[in-house]
Amino acid sequence: MLWIRLFLPFAGAYFLSYLFRTANAVIGPVLSDELTLGAADLGLLTSAYFLAFGAAQLPLGVLLDRFGPRRVEAALLLIAAGGAAIFACGHGIVMLAFGRGMIGLGVSACLMAAFKSFSQWFPLERQASLTGWIMTSGTLGALAASAPLNAALNVATWRDIFFVLSGLTVAVSAWLYISVPDKPVSEHPEPLSVQLAGVRQVLVSRHFWRFAPLGFAQIGGFMAVQSLWSSAWLMHVNGHTRSLAADHLAAMSMAMVVAYILIGLLATGLARRGIAPIYLLGGGMVMSLLTLLLIITQAIDRHYVLWMAFGVFSCFGTLAYSQMSAGFPVALSGRANSTLNLMVFLGAFGLQWGMGVLIDMLQASGLSTAIAHRNAFAVLFVLQAIAVWILIGGRQTSAKAD
Image (cartoon, rainbow, N blue to C red; front, side, top):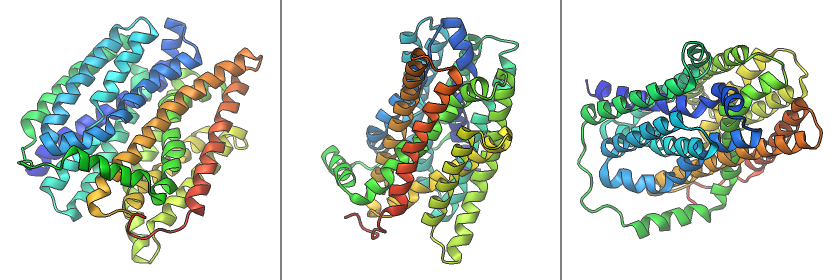
């Protein structure tokens, strides 16, 4: 069946993408101990993934249009496989960060290539369900990078695991190249100058800047926490072991799997009752903020519940893409989403590294590890609160970009 030939290889690729993205939350403490890395070093090498991923977003649209998702995705996955192998061989921060950056570049097309392929082969009403399932496959990758990855560390080294992941990535690349059918691409693709003019139109729009801070601080900030600082908080602030911290992350990922499925159903149901998805987005972001505040203040001693809730409410951030792109002509929607995605991954890079730098500075000034982490999370909370205020306080824009 066509959907199996298309969906399963892309789902496998996005599974690996999310596994790579969040793996350092579990192996981070091992890397720190083995290679004597500080919080800033760990934040930098982990966030190199996001920097490379984000930098690839704008040219990615041109490549997908010109060469098609099958060729682009299969080729980039080979870069990710090479990056995983380099990471596995790394003995210093430069080599580790370089390998991690190659991984980020290599998986940068996993979601966008899937969306492009779905739009080529399936009607719009079918694409919605496929999008929900592809997001679920990514969350399953995050789940695999929690308790299962921690269990794997009991029988193999982190280097062994990344060599295995490198081989799996090559296998998925070959599977995708062989299985996914080709759709003829336009012989006269849109010139690069026209593509860039569209990006400029997005960047000067007030409508875009209503959502851009949310992408940077809220969505990108959650990525920064989920992929590294969540386990550091659970271990250094809550006093959990690495194994128990991984169990918390597994619970959060399982809750997110359910949330991604239900959000689509909830948005559709509320829309039929005249409640626009923007209100669902705003409500979810406010609840995410409140949950983060409860985590920081430790007002509730229910760590599993709080981290599951934080993951669930943060999932509502995915609605920002459709709500933002709806303010632009259809011809610009792809570039609008790519530009927002760039903001998200720049935020993930900057905030993940920045939190590490801040933690090291606060510890150097004499604060305890727990207090340093709490202050870093408090700064993140303030930035996210500003972003949510801009979203909620922004004027409703018309269906056209201003």
